[in-house]
Amino acid sequence: MVNNFFIYILLILAVCWLPPLRSFYRRIPRDWTLLTYGLFALVLFLLSGVDFDETPQLNLFVLIPSLLTLGAAYAHMRIPSVFYRTAVLLGALYSGMLFWLSPIFTSMVNIWIGIGIGLLMMLAYGLSLTLILLAPLLAMRTIHFWHTNRTSQISQ
Image (cartoon, rainbow, N blue to C red; front, top):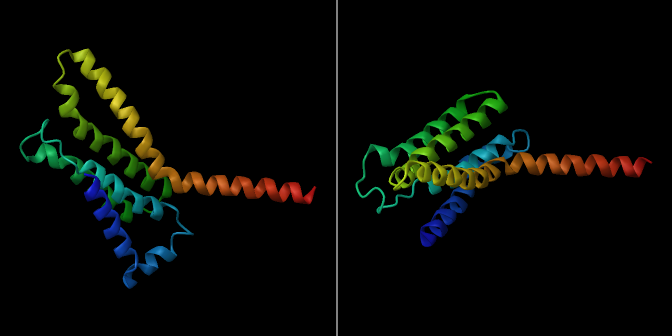
């Protein structure tokens, strides 16, 4: 999996230098959700991994997380509102994780243990992937806050 991750990162970097995508990169300062859209490719990679111990056969249930994330990526490009674009990405993230993790917590011995483990895993994975997706917004807000405080200190 680690080797696949580095190959995937190299592919993303190779695509970054393609001339047709330069207009996409030029629009990022005006629309931070485009950077989030780029980070969504990392989420697609993470949700496309199949645990062959839990789901030994490739079926529709295994493909649903990837299909949800691809559908959200398509919807992201079509929705004009920044809030709804981000909500679509986060909604696809959590619903894809539910399908991705469900074989693990449905095969537990006790239903309550399965629910507890499932919620814990959803919380751990969900928070980290949400931070990845919202990192551009959080960075922009932090820079804006820092810049506002710095200019107010200089003017005093």
